[in-house]
Amino acid sequence: MAIMLPDFKPKPCAECGMAGVHHWAERWRLRVDGFFRPFTRPLDAAFSRVMPAVDAALNHIVPPLARVLVKAGLALEIDDLRTHPSETAQALFGEAKKRGIEMRELRILGLPRRIFLARHKRTTWVFEGLPRPARIQPSLSWIDDKHEVKRRFKAAGFPVAEGKHCRTERRALRAFHALRKPVIVKPHEGSGGAHVTVHLMTPEELRRAFWNARQVAPSVLVEEELTGPVYRATFVERKLAGVLRRDPPHVVGDGRRTVRELVAEENKNPLRRGPVFAEINVDSPEAARELAWQKLTPEAVLKKEEIAFLHFKVNWGVGGTSWDVTEEAHPDNKKLFEQIGEYLGDDIAGIDFMIPDITKSWREQRCGVIECNSLPHIGNHHFPYTGEVRNVAGKIWDMIFPESK
Image (tube, rainbow, N blue to C red; front, side, top):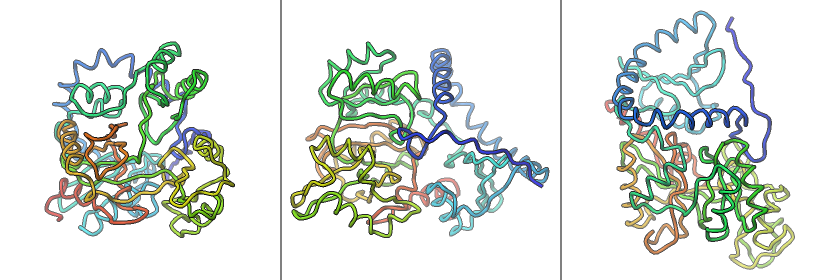
């Protein structure tokens, strides 16, 4: 009989969304990281040289250890990930099955920690989240730190939103007064729009947003708010693997129906029954705030082609949508993304880029990178709301097991 521990989930939090975290634990982790970071930064180069050897060793050590833990009832091995809550894991599993790659998830004491084992012929690969080759990955130590990304990208000449890194409310207020309005406040590390506040126009709004972000991070970023869809550019082996447009939940007017009626019609789409995409909630507090920002209500009749947004986040769980625009992206934008991929230097990475029109050059628009991700959700490319599927998982397995093509 296997010994299992309960998976202690964080309390529901509207600001965290679906990817909730324990606030105190996340804040404490970042505080400890921030304290030791000045001392460990000089060692980054040495660590990066050692990590390939560590990764290679884990590929030999973990498989027999996993067998022992499973036999002792201290772990589970799950070999069918089609019901896994992560679309990324489902995409990897689906492509692995086509190629004859045996993929399993290892759950020590029954806890899901995104630890996977993949075996093809006589080679086994152990990884967390996404598989990476056992070689130097230059930006892994800083890619998820929004402040560090902004600092480095700005120095490299890549477009980013103007902003400041703030540890105190006073400093955040100074940044607010110096920046173009509206501004946005977000934790200096994290993803999924957790504890992010947008459309800030007054000092009082800034104060509330600052302490909201401080619930999960000891410091925050105060930035000018960019406009437009969020585009996810994903890199595999430093090459652009796909560009996905991600929109917040919205409806388009026809000159006759109200926002509420348009939402009801949109929610009839069977894709919004799950497991990937969700219905739009027109009566949520977030919808009320977003509509008020646009000077609208649920009962407002939209003009023909007028767009009403019902959340600032693009996440699927709040009703966001997505589709592939790799071929539509302007050559200048593709070149910019490829330059960023080369600069990051990692085998797998993702950037979120905000721009009004992806078909026009970034040089002609107000735009910028809003964050990077060392573990991009490649499932986004495999499960678009509409349009072409981009097989990013296939490119990853080509890199890990090239003979499985």
